[in-house]
Length: 354
Image (cartoon, rainbow, N blue to C red; front, side, top):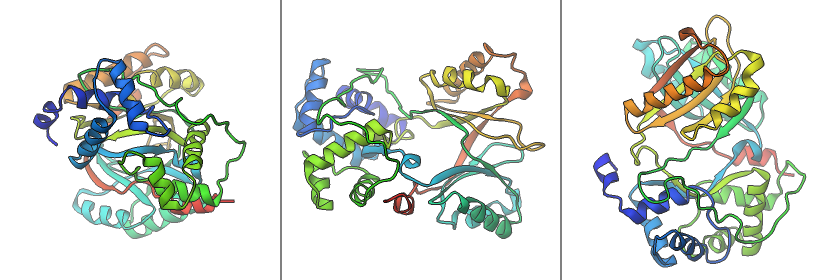
């Protein structure tokens, strides 16, 4: 969907995209309950009409999926961000070698004079990271720089549109069964089956939880209760529509990196995370002599101008904590997606199943 097509999204499409990037009901007849919440906001729509619109937006590629955004780290295993240099004359060869590893989930070319390839390695056992990176180094002849997450301040990739409910604050997550978190990091075999069934999205039908239950031969009420509990425990970040941000016009992807004084990171992190347009915010390690930055904040914009304006707002907020010098930060825009398969949870869930 190009920008002209985005402009063709009507008022109701925009309302549901803004309203339900989280907070979708986990209950019986969820589309009816969600439609009632929209109607209370002046968006008159029935449950059947809402279902049809979500189906259409999914078919048109406006959504990547509808369902749960699973927190892979909470399910089991680990993932790490890795940077490396791919010589211009061998770039495609190096990319092919990196992408051939099934443990590599995402890979991006980014604008940087040296570290121009950035990828994510996802494994069931943290000890496998070193094994994968050693193999990549042997195959490519290039050094890798592991940048595991030290602290997470925000993972909230929501993309709002001009239109009704611009703040996206419709929250129906309280609807459905009342649950309590359990004090257990591992998952059961039944929970594993549920995670694998929903990782690529829910069936877009009137009763998605019933359809999931039928797929894994489970009780529908147990499915609803477990999804609600997983939300409470952080195993699921949110339930709703997951938009394709490129389709919504958010084409400028700026990874800003900062050399924050170590004693200020815990203060700076929440402050930067509070900026609504910052979608990911982490502390990661430096690599002496190569990579001086220890703080990452991802921003997205619908134009280069908007993206730079948002990056400047990040810099201004940083400047409230210490005097930010030009050498203290950089912004690496992605120029090409080299691989994007998503983080596969099969092995990670298996390793954490009791």
